[in-house]
Image (spheres, rainbow, N blue to C red):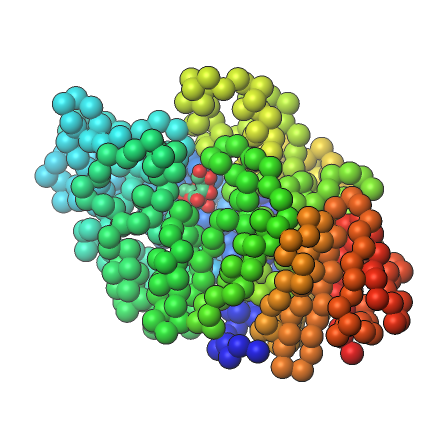
Length: 556
Ligand code: TEU
Ligand code: CA
């Protein structure tokens, strides 16, 4: 087994909460911190270790909190600082850590820094953002925004343009300005001193900008993230942040490494010179994605991506996730929506997520197998990305039907429908008249209450896997080997620790598939399975693996 350094953030499991959609405590239709407080027992029951809270700061919600107006204030919709402190204390009492979302590539345009900055060219806050003069009446460069249209917005007060990689209401901060960096470090210290356990860093690889803003070619225009995430000073900024703040605390950091090159991701997470502990790479969760389009993908491709992240050296530690607030639901994308197999496929994905090498990140609702919503018209979407890109995509000749069809596969809104707690109004998410966003129509069937006491439910399956994984160092740190990388239907791998080997068998298809068991695994004992009766009998050499069957064996 590789000689990996043991760390708590490699061993524990993270659960992401998108507060707006988790639990509403006061009937206004918006999830809030007291809602989270009321569900701490639930999180405890499930058995996760760390909560990652999507932004809870004061925000006008152009992008559901990823546009911060005041980094020192709790969003009024979510509650108060007292609620936050109480939530943190209660999580700690229950041995659950809390990491916050650090969104410092940009702020809201309603942040006081930007309000000042836009007043005039000589305002002391001018350099807090990225301002440039136009180019013969045009934007300073052809850089596009991720949410449609150009990344430069002309501001009437000075006639200059400001940079925004995301919505117009999300101006990019100017990290070249040391005062901006100092302010960011102060914000980090403020929350760390309250006792939070680290940060998930929103689009952190975009903070350094190439000050020449070079013209992008056709390919780059379609994939601006590759350019935006290769700014010349990224490493330097992270190094400074580490020296000034992170090195002084025992916390975990996970950077959203959108578009970053493998080399740079490798460099910033190398344990011998660690700037951030972990990164989210997008290739697995977004397999087959090309902007707003979801193209077909196949299992050997997916397995190759896992092999790649597993075979890095002992100084790097991967993350594993299939869901978050920016992606469709994994059961719909990676599992099966056939009623015969939906639940089984959700359990299969649970095994995959919790037995691969790396720190697992679960997303609210994943533990009950929530699925994509069906949207019948473009007007039904809420997301600033889906709506912002609309005009541009339609103008490029794509029909509304095509865009709608693709959004039904790829939209971020699938993960933002409220958490399904029970089969009452609004799925038990809110007792109010109206929820801020529709509840998935399948809530009467897929909900927490139905699953909590059902030992065959997806919830119970996650729960037992989480128990099985806890402090299981053979599984957590064990080496990885893919036993059938080319197989189109089967995903079979081993995790070999110092004194045990686990064999994990997954059939990701609707077919029954046979597989010759290598003879080193003579008498594998099934310990967790998504079928009642095992498909392995002692001495058997060829396995018949049923549709969406998934099990873990211990080899004796
Ligand atoms: O996401 C940025 C990102 O990498 C993409 O997922 C983005 O949502 C889009 O799909 C690019 O085409 C982070 C947050 O997770 C996301 O919710 C925010 O909207 C975004 O940054 C801006 O803060
Ligand atoms: Ca509320």
